[in-house]
Length: 78
Image (tube, rainbow, N blue to C red; front, top):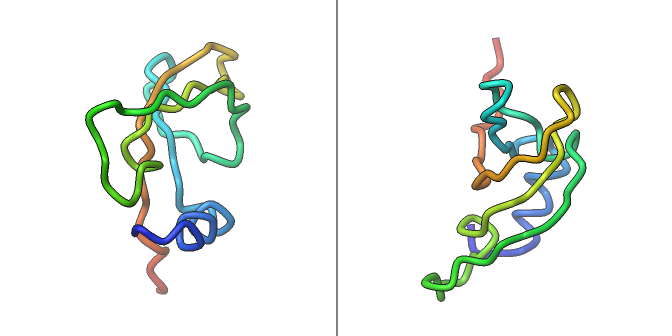
C-alpha cells in the first residue's frame, strides 16, 4: 500500500490499529489521541507510514504508548 490515498481510506474505514501495551489490546487509530510520529531512519521505501512508530494516548488507560501501525483485513461478511 504505497499510495497515500489508500492509507487514508484505510484510516477512514477503521482498518488501522495501534497496540496498547498497558491494556494489552489493539486500539483503533481513529480513537486515540495522536501525540507524535517517530520516523524509521533505515526505511527509504514508498510507504513510510507503515514503518513509523506512533506515539499516542490510549483512550482507556490514559497512558502514553508507542506502537507500529497494523492494518486489519476488511470485515468478512456473514
